[in-house]
Image 1: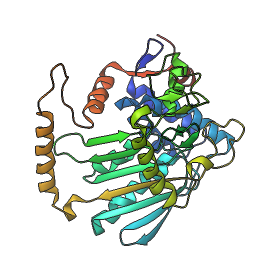
Image 2: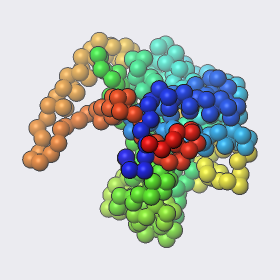
Image 3: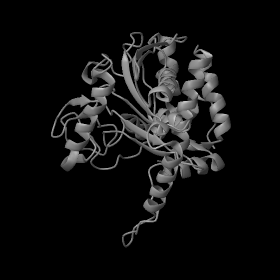
Image 4: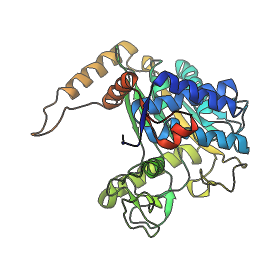
Length: 348
């Protein structure tokens, strides 16, 4: 979303300042590079809730001690097609990219790899890691569970996290096919963004402390699952899928047991977050060339499908994101007032 309260800044300068602040807070070069890469991905494709606005939070957590500034990642191969990555309580972006790299190595041998991540932290937009695999020619899935902030269907308390599911696939001579979705109607970071912008929320995405839907971001105490008041059982079920992979298979923290991400009273204790990636090598199935031909044909058919009367253009997953990234590279990246202050950008 964009608002009159936001300012536009050049992407290259924004990236430099994000990296500088993370480094200033003590992040190792590898950690800072990984976090900057993931944050800039989100801000470029329009996922502002998980973009550069999180830089200040990560810096506070490193200074406070929750996040290990110089983690030593450890990879433990558990079988022919599986591995675990120990994140050493550092920035989750670093561990997640390492898991994708590990998954690619295994998938080249075994065709498919499942890589769990333990002792990690918030990783930003899960799509950043799905893209990292797809850009290397691999079909990639990435997910994480997070602290409870989403009501169950017809529920009146927080239970699941926003628990994203992200999928990406390589497309010859084009940007990857990308689906990156929260299993809540919106992420909680979007509520915080709306608070910063003093902007109303869309209807049916958040609820107050008693579970009643609200559009006031200052009254929002929990989110509604994807599907809203009528079909939210779908989103609630998908949120459980993320928990199954990220917490149950890795032995990490369940959604209701997390230290809240923004708990100002506890910024020293690590949160032991779990994530999960699956990496698939098309060469070990239909073959990379035939897969490329097939996905190209599929996407051409999809984009050429008839449009309903009054409808817009039919788009494939990722089309909107890549168009937004191109636009922002030309016009600048919008940032909210709090982020502008932290990164020392002057209002226009």
